[in-house]
Image 1 (tube, rainbow, N blue to C red):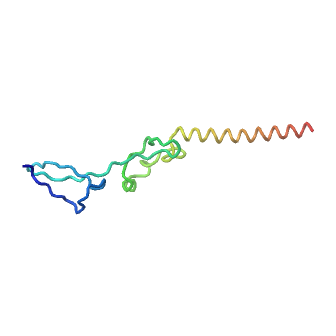
Image 2: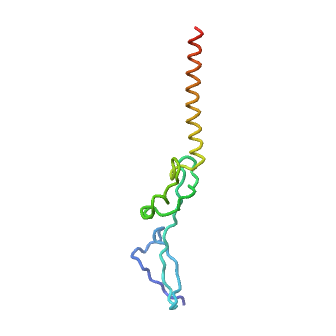
Image 3: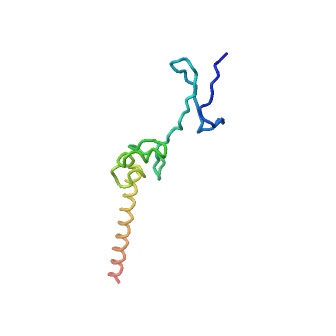
Length: 113
């Protein structure tokens, strides 16, 4: 017959925060090891891909690591991926260019009249 294993925590329910694995100790006993939840990587706010260069940790663990490990040295670093930042810069530039072209066309029409 299999050896009985007792819970180490007071929570008896099979929830995601109470996952456990049976492990055999060097002494030959079977004990429960409580397994922590898997961390998900931070995602880009625009396209949703995992941000490269930033570790996947549980929310509270971000408080213990330094700021240089939580961000990337770039505009919107740690919030948006490089491709999305590139497209934002390009879009802003094109919008400004369109405004200038509109202004020039308006001044040329005024000069004709």
